[in-house]
Image (tube, rainbow, N blue to C red):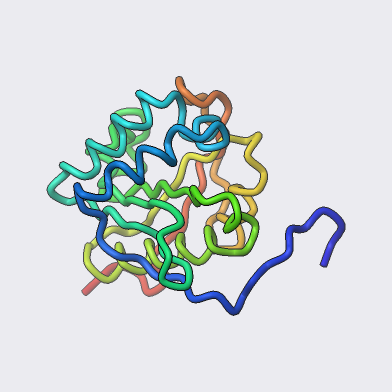
Length: 179
């Protein structure tokens, strides 16, 4: 383990379950946490993003569970729904993935990386998306590293109106276009 690496609990089982409206109080409590606000924007902006995802017909919204306990939230949205295509036509037909581990005791254990993998596997299994991408604040080094470990590559730096300088990180469909 390198200096500064958080201990990882690779034995913990990570799975996703569909997020429901009844999960809103739990999700909202996570969105109010200072660390989450730093990476997802203000509490009202993050609330709006999650509620829009929950209402999106093609949104894949999930509760991240570790060892059967809810610990975070993730969603994947068509880039057009997430408004990213207007800014970058190369993202057309792709899905944007956003995720966080809300429970402090479960951070730094590899759960975020595992959740990212589960989300993009679901996107590739259920859509024709050629790739998935994330917009990750440069200053959130833990999230950048989790994306790298999950197979995302750096594309370029973009200036996000809510989050400031961010990496646009992308992962291609491994098997080429869906048949």
